[in-house]
Image (cartoon, rainbow, N blue to C red; front, side, top):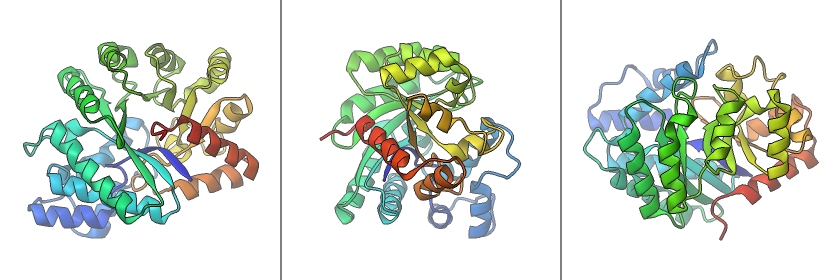
Length: 314
């Protein structure tokens, strides 16, 4: 099994967040481990992507030290390996772990150490790291630093750049200078688009040269865009459960992933945030088969799409 779209800070073990807070003498807005879990998981009545993103606040409180970052990167690699994943790309934003005095380089080095240790202990899995820039109106300098860090560490672990965050509040076109620099450096990219905003956000992402789009479900409302995606072999990193929780779709049954697949779009299945969304890749595949009508052979085709689209080719 392959995971192309998985956020580190949305996939931490609640027990680890609790333990790290104790070690770092951080007072969490939670009284027990179960309270931590409850506050890390998206509420059943979540109404927007912005509300969903609030679930990342508490994990980030404990991700301001190098040893903590190394630990959680190792643990996520371990969790993925134990669940049967053989290839994964984990994404995170180095700029969100600078409050304790670390640089983006130091944050990235810690995550690299963690996944490398995980791969040594679980040689059946290969893991890459995608460095996320963040949407915001004061983020340009930090985003450019992220691109520079990606350029510096690009190799057998760091494999691409992304941009994440509140898509509807900070449109994709605002970040043209960031992706101009990404193209200049020849860094592979994937871009969150077509999640909380419409097809035009995806068109902007495509104009930057990306061959992969995170989510991209808004394409289903635009037949011409669907045709373009299919003809150009653009890979969509689809996260069904997450898309329902953020109200991108009104229900699991109404998710357009099958419509996109049947139209020839290279859709892949991913879990987005294992803890926040209470899911994993096995649960997502089960949804495709049991609720959305995918056959075993169609699931295999999606795995083939994911394998072809992976950033670490060697």
